[in-house]
Length: 108
Image 1: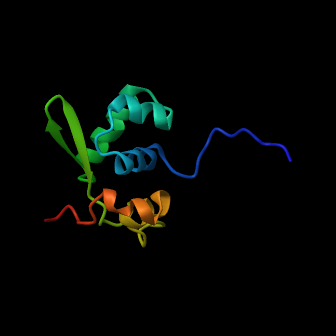
Image 2 (image 1 turned 45 degrees about the horizontal axis):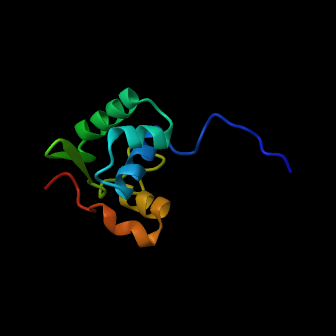
């Protein structure tokens, strides 16, 4: 059986960023960018958009950022709306790593 190279994945770069930050809330931008296969500039833009949407909250600890994911909201596209970010991350990370993000909504 041969392996076919593809240039697409089932999850978006936004989902990849969220999975990386859920695994390591103290990850450096460079680490996230390398892991998901984008430039640091692109990773910065992705995280900024997630921050603007209230899905990721950044806090500074000295010279570093720490990221907190607000995972209780439904996914944004109508086809996916019956699933929450919490459910997606639990599936992607496995049950053993489910405690690394918060399940609260951005409303409170």
